[in-house]
Amino acid sequence: MSIAVAVPASTVVLLRGDHPFEVFLVRRSDSVAFLGGAHVFPGGRVDPADRIHDVVGGVRLQADSFVAATENLTSRMPDVPADVVIAHHVAAVRELFAAHLQTGPTYKDAAGRPRVVSARQRK
Image 1 (cartoon, rainbow, N blue to C red):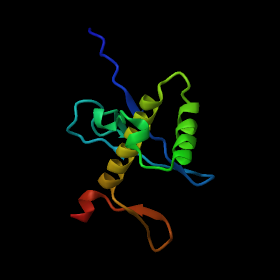
Image 2 (image 1 turned 60 degrees about the vertical axis):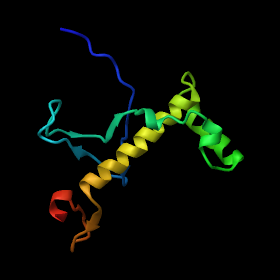
Image 3 (image 1 turned 30 degrees about the vertical axis):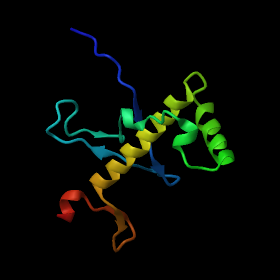
């Protein structure tokens, strides 16, 4: 058996509410080879496009806001270069957005319970 090479990836654990809280999961397609049909946290690999090579020039924020945001992100991963930390966060946001598009928007039913309209139900 060969050992697979680790691929940089990000996962989002999204919770809502207090007690009991809700957990946002997505269902993997039955057609994928690895964990087909499983309910998982949204996430995926860090793509080259997620990297901001010129961090200061590539982000159009006010300098003070950018420095504060970067310090906040990198403080949780102090041994990782800032551009890698930001790439992981960009990948996480991208994957969460893609998962939302896959599952569809939520709405409340007549009893006030949140419901999700899946992409299949919208067609």
